[in-house]
Length: 139
Length: 215
Image 1 (cartoon, rainbow over the protein chains, first blue to last red):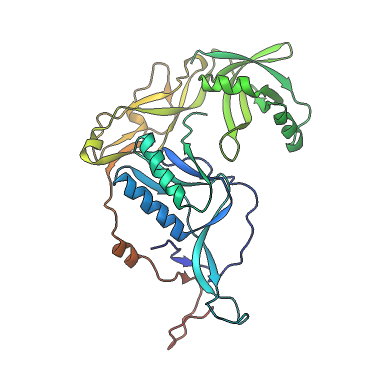
Image 2: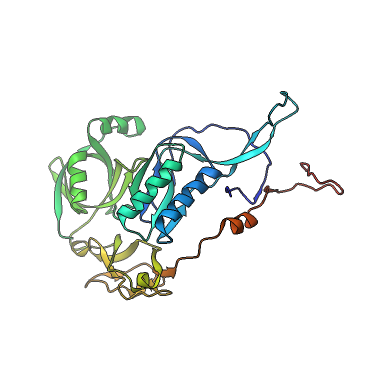
């Protein structure tokens, strides 16, 4: 089941713009290895769930997968064969706004090669280019 | 940490984002020097030399500014949004006999006993604040996790620090835990937990109507 918020202030939202790069959440903070976004995109709850399933399935319950993004933004759409007008459509799905540099997934408690393989599988589920990153231990 | 490195620095006369961008284009890293109740000085360092030194574990550097040579400690390094390049460095003036507070990374060593029992090691904090002489700063603090079983936890107070090093962080700071991996939820369980539609804060449900309207 795709991720979505439990409660929200508004039912629908405007599209908005995503300028610039990620100025926070741009380094590995929880696990040892991470998957960093290199492009700007909306990532749907379904994409995130597919990534999570791909990683956990590959890891066979070893290690821990951290999801650093959450689909807070509702995206609405009109039903098929509907005439234009009559107001904004109903919420269809939920997305996370991701900018270049954002660490989307992290893995801890497994060897580097295993984490890399798992994150490659996650990257294939993402609609953007991603890269494998490691935690920066020192300065 | 007795390694020292000699770097030549140039004093920056122009500051601000535009001037700094120009400095970076020339293959240099903008830096700031402060400490010892003296005026802060904006300088620039050669990018290649500094990065090379940092990769070799140098934290204490001798900086030559004109004819003046000063001993400095790398206090903070800022990276770009992808974490690839260094964009700015903070340097603090130090004396060789001085005692200072620094943050040192923790290195986990060994395979925890708990991992054979089906658990995983979780690192809650990977740095530790310590107080020691400038010449005694350890590169890393080694934490042995060999005897950590499932349900065990290691705190900052449990670490054996080298001689001359004092702990500044709270001894109760949680560093490492070993816990069993939670059983994955089945698709049906996950579906039951998920709401069909999020609840809207402040929305009033009209009696007798299945649909909700914006309040």
